[in-house]
Length: 427
Image (tube, rainbow, N blue to C red; front, top):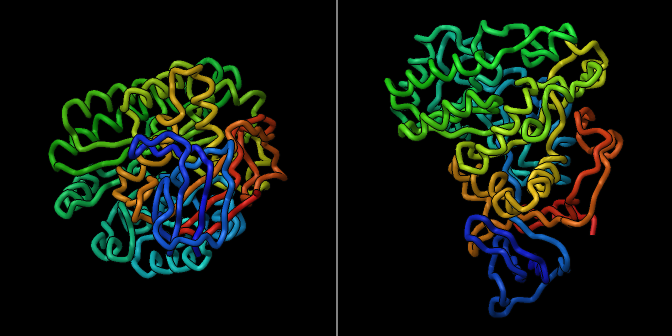
């Protein structure tokens, strides 16, 4: 199929391109920018006048819930949600059932995802068998099966000796370990940010030091082992300052934040709104502002959706008993554009888009997140002037819960192209 996208404003942070330019696609790859290649005849033409064309979004944390949690979501529903959100590549954590700790399970997941002909799925393998924090998995076999790194998801490794061995092994073979810094005991059982609001509401708290204690320990182990680590969903100003100093020191370190934490604070819990029950918890306004500043100065490398679909029964409970998580694939682009818009020019749109395209692709080592001749044509086309209301019945994801229900957001995805094929279009 030969596809011609004309008159669109192409924003490609990887090359610095930001201008109205035609894109010509052939055999699943970008054949030319600007002028058509010789003997090119378009099978289909998309008029992108007034629209923005970017690389397909790259999401570093999207739970697809298969295998094992199909009552919460399915590959079909969540990959369709990815298409509606312009996400063409996504990384999925290993906390499925069974856990992604064997090569056969990883191969099965990748094959099932490939059969959907939608987003490219890159699994994280479990760092320890069953995520139990005791025995290391066969990392080489999991890498051969398609894993791009190794994670404990939300399960902390209590035994520091085990974590040291895991980091040493990963460093030996050049693997990246993905960890969310959370002390196994401090704040255990907490459901909200420790502070005045949690106290007034009578909610058990998760203090910031639960994140910083874990970071101090991890950085000492990184110094000892030389391991490369990606820190997932940092939530606090204090944690970000530690990461900033560690990067200046030269530790091989990257990190991301969840898009919810870019906008919301603990006050958005309101009157025990379980849609705002997230892990890590929403923190203070100071923490939120620090996250935005860290995204601007490069301390934070990427923004992820932290897509975690939860079924109705698990959210229709008192706040402290409700399952944490929110849908995010369909909101990621809009919330990042809103972040740029709300800055009143301080954060350019190209810089914001980089945090969900070029930068996450680079830290995983993926050849995507760019508009480049000769590379796969994974693209997102959206209307920056259109706005949409976040309603549960308008979401394609099987998970209908998000703290942004009722919000009017900017940017509507008009088409998503994967490997040169129109995987979603409302044009």
